[in-house]
Amino acid sequence: MKTYFVDSFTNEKFKGNPAAVCLPNTELDSETMQSIATEIGFSETAFIKQISDNTYSIRFFSPKTEIPLCGHATLASSKIVFDTTSFENIKFINAENVELPIAKVGNKIKMQFPVYSTQETEVPQEMTDALGISGISNKRYSPKNKIILIEIKSAIELANLKPDFTALINSYTGINGVLVTAVSDTENFDFHYRYFWPWSGTNEDPVTGGVQTFLTKYWAERLNKTKFNAYQSSSRTGIMSTELVDDKVFILGEAVTLFEGEFII
Image 1 (cartoon, rainbow, N blue to C red):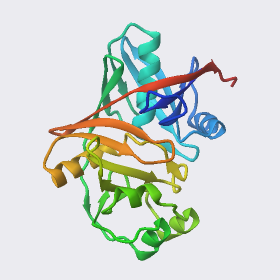
Image 2 (spheres, rainbow, N blue to C red; image 1 turned 45 degrees about the vertical axis):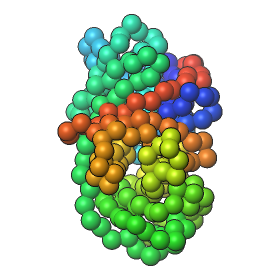
Image 3 (cartoon, rainbow, N blue to C red; image 1 turned 90 degrees about the vertical axis):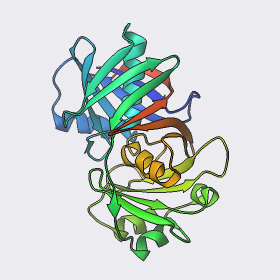
């Protein structure tokens, strides 16, 4: 099975978020795909298959479970398709039959994702203690993504967080992860964020595009604008541009291919 490793949301190798992109030439069951994703160990492994012309099915697996939608693995998969075909525009269809139109824009890739709402929520003290947060500016919950959003005041504090992941898992159940965000302290970016998801993936996702399905809308309401430059302040770091247009969010980013080989199954 042809397999690629791609660093997403970066133009530098060993930065951004690594994803595996697998192109099965036979039908694989979910258990086998999960085993492959667990073996590879990246925060996400994508399995893509051409359906017709420039349309592909796509499924995403973390080391622990299947994920309906993933931004950085979609970007990685788009990078491979664009590099190995003459297509300038493609479309992925995920496991929930959500269509994801993708366009090649120079050396960048533009992805169209759906937008999901957030609602008020409560965050237990045990969670803020586990994250190491001193104070909360706002807190929301994305039911579709099962992700808690916490806004704090300082981008510096955000970058310096060192969560206790055992305590974090024990502080809450029934969610996929918790996203911590802050308004940027530089002119280059509008907001910073980090995503912790030991419940369903790795401890921390280096760069997360899928959360823009609700995070871009959140900051659009907070900052009264629709176009953003976002910075994920994980140890690997990552950047992307986003734009909110009605019920869609456009995510623009780059990716670098590191590895091409074959997975023996």
